[in-house]
Structures are given as C-alpha cells and as structure tokens.
Length: 313
Image 1 (cartoon, one colour):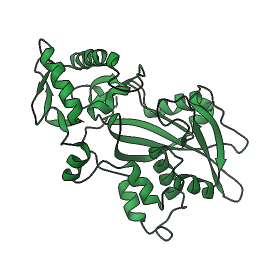
Image 2 (cartoon, helix red, strand yellow):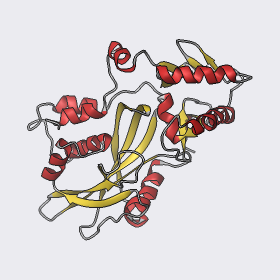
Image 3 (cartoon, rainbow, N blue to C red):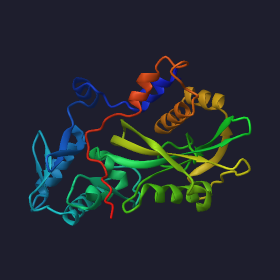
C-alpha cells in the first residue's frame, strides 16, 4: 500500500499546506475560532452552517460569528463560562449524532494566559474535531533489547470494539491527556489500563520528545501533538490487555515493523510514532533513507494553535 516512510508520514500529516488546496479538499476555507486574537480552532463549512443556526436561536447568543471568524461574545469571559457555553452546545448536538463516540472525557483547550497552564476551557473529547481543536496525547514505545543490542518492539492490536480504527495496529500504550492529568500521570494510567504494566515499571518511561501533525477524518479536523515516551521493558515481561481496548500484543523486530507499516496495517499516527522511534534508535538514518530530512520535518509540523504552558510553583 505504501512505498516508503515519507508516504506513511504524509498519510497522517495530510491537512494541505497550500491554502488553495484546503479550499478544494473541504469545499471552502475553514473559519477560525479566535480567543484573545489567537486561533484556537477551525470550523469546516458544513459545521459552520450548523453553528450559525444554533447561535441564532440562542438568547443571549454565545458566539459572535462572521464569515471570517468565530469568537465568544464579550459576556463569555471566563474559564467557567466558556466551558458551560460549549457544554450546552455539545449537549444540544449530541442527540443528533453530530459527532462520533461520546467519551465523557474532558479535554483542555488552550489559549488563556491568565488561567493556570494556559487553559481557556474544557470540552468533550469526541467533539474536538468538529472545531479543529488542537489536542495532546502520550504514546509509549514499549521495547526490549537483548544482550546483542537487538531491539524488538511491543505492538498492540486495537480491539474490534473500538469506536475508531478498530483492529488496526497501535503503539504499546497510547492515550489522550485529559483535563487535570500531567503527561507522566497519563503514561502511568494508560500503561496500567491498556497493557497491565505496573506503575513500578511505567514510571521509568523516558520522555524523548514530541511529534506534531495536522490530519483530518470524517469526524473533522485534528491538529495533534503527541508526547513520545520510550519504555525499555524486562525481556521476561509481556504486556497483557486489561481494559478491553487492546485485542493482543505482538513482539516484533524491525523488519516486521516495516512490513506491517508498508502494508497499511497501522493507525496512521501510531505508524509515524514508530518511524520516530526507528530514527532515534538508528534504524532509519541519513545514509539508508533518501527522504530522511523530509521525514523529520514532517514529523514536527508547526501548528498555529496555543500550547500548554506548564505553571511551576
């Protein structure tokens, strides 16, 4: 299905870089959502129509909507009010099945420097693609290394009951960062829930960097940043499914990883997390990969949205 690693990266980071191409793909230009002059999301033309109709029916209207931008009305001026306005909208749209897979999980939306960690409001995870909200997660590369230095990676197969990408291959552990969780807390929680990896082992996961990309699905726009962790596991430890999100785990060498990726068996963003791992561990190098620079550039797309700003005390 794929001929090379760069095609795999482009398959995930597929939101067009060219504004004219954006209009061709989506039948019009997305309308930005602004807060304090910064873009915090983008609304596609079909959602824009629905949002405007909803806003016109509200009294007082929660949004100031024009063809060039969407903003909260001046009275929606706090974390609590923004959160409540968005919750009311989501509760109204939920029975109409406007979005897939309600999670009952709150994601932070960033862009208010006066609030701790730059959080402007929180909203239902499943609805973030409708508004092109930038989201954040953790991906853990669980791997083993033998006495000869050979690396093998634990690969998860997503359960067929998953709402998204059922049956596809995944990283050993991955999950979105919910409101009030840190990156490391999320790693430890997801390791336990998805792979039965105890905290005593999960705590040793090392944050090796981030990848960022801008993708889209039938659910909407998904600009995403993933914090990448490497977790060297004991050679006699085997991850085990626990919460029903994973069907099983495989321990694969580099040749098996590459073949499965080129065969299109991976969830797209998990494939590029694995490519990043292979670069950092010297499997993919400038001497054996013609697209080495382009791959690295595409793994770290600059996104226009506000980021978390951790408040240290």
